[in-house]
Image (cartoon, rainbow, N blue to C red; front, side, top):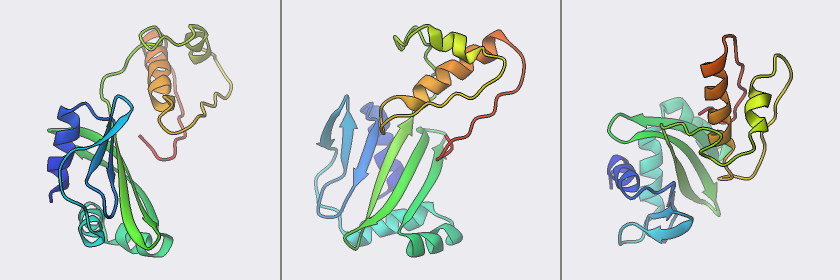
Length: 163
């Protein structure tokens, strides 16, 4: 199984996430619904092989110790992805989120217009928090794009993991 082909498939199907877990087929989330994208159950060996193929030697070594690794992938033909590799009940698992390249505006996202005012603040600290998949990165991208389009200056963004 080749990870690049799976990623191309989720992009074509407009999926937001890819889930690779032992004894389950590759699953993806499309408009909030998790569904298989191909037949066949994954083995621990297949998932570990995929995980090792996207990590540098040091990352793989760290993963063996910490049982978790966050990293980013970029393939010109399919885009950017945030990857979480983990170990659960002794087996490897991988969750991959597709990072969309188009930046929507605050208005297009139907967010409160006050977010544009906050983005234009001369000083201060803005924290954007929420559950996984709640739109934090999308909201921040809209705010940063608005600020970049309407003023000059520096923006410092602290993210974990970095997108």
